[in-house]
Image 1 (cartoon, one colour):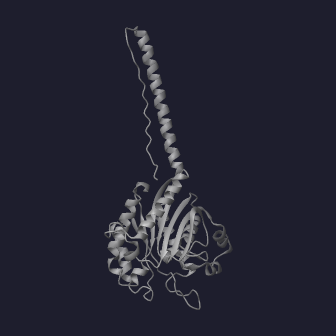
Image 2 (cartoon, rainbow, N blue to C red):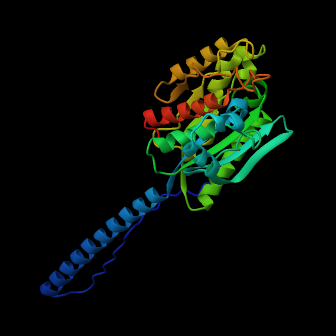
Image 3 (spheres, helix red, strand yellow):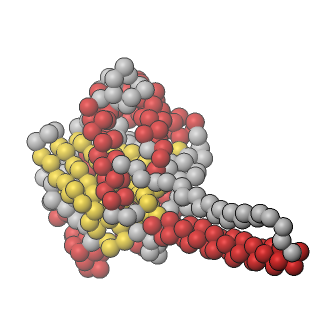
Length: 327
C-alpha cells in the first residue's frame, strides 16, 4: 500500500482583544504578538526543512527488470568464473552491497528460482542457482562507476514467453494477460515491502529484455503496438512511484541471430520505433558484439548469451542509466 502523504503544517495564533485598554498595554501586546508570530514562523520553517530532509533521506532508487530468458539468465556460472578475475569472483560470491535485489525467475512453470526479500546481487540469481542474469553485470557496472547510493532492483522474468501471447498489457487487448497481471502485482508487493521498511521508493527505470520468442514465430507483426501499450500501462500502474521526470524505459535489442529468431530484424525495428516515439524517456541497449554461439562447447545454446556476453549486457543496461544520469 502506498503511504506517501504531503504533510502541511498550519500555525494558528488567535488573539482576542476586548474592552478598553490603555494604548501602552495594546502596544506591548502587539509587540509580543509580533515576536510570537516571528518565532512561530521560524519554527514552522525549521519543521518544513526537517521534514523535507527526512523524506530525502528515506528516498531510494528502484529499477525494474523484466522479460524472458535473457533477462532471467541462462548463462552458466561455470563459464563466467573461468573468464573473470579473482576480485570479480569475490563480489560474485559475496554480493554487491549497494545493489539489492528481490527476484522471481520462472522457467516454463517447472523451475522457479526466487528470493522474496531484498538481498545483495550475487551469482546464482538466474533461472537456477547455477546461472545468472542481467543483474550481475548491472550491479558490477554501478559499483565500478563509484556510485555508493543504494539501488533496489526488482526482477521478474519468465523464459520462453512472448509479448503477443504472454505479456500483453491492459490497454493492448480486451483483457490483460495473467503473466502481466502477476508481474504488476509482484512489483507493487516489492514496493510495499520497501515502504514497510520505512523507505520512500521511486521507480527510476523500467528495463526490458524480451522479444526473442516473438521473433521466432509469426507473432512479430504486432510487436510495436504491444510494446507501446506495455510501456504506457506500466508507467500508469506505477505513477505514484515515479519521480518528477517520469519513468524511463530501457529496451534491449535482441540478438541478430536468424537461427534462433528468424524475424529479429522486425522485432528490433519495432523497438527502435518505440524508442523514437519519446527519445527523452525511451532508450535502447545495443547488443552488437555479444556472443551466443560458444557455450556449452559440445552443444552451443544458440538461444541465450554466453556468460561474458550476458555480463556485458547487464553492464550496458546500467551504463544507459549512468550516462543519462537517471541514477
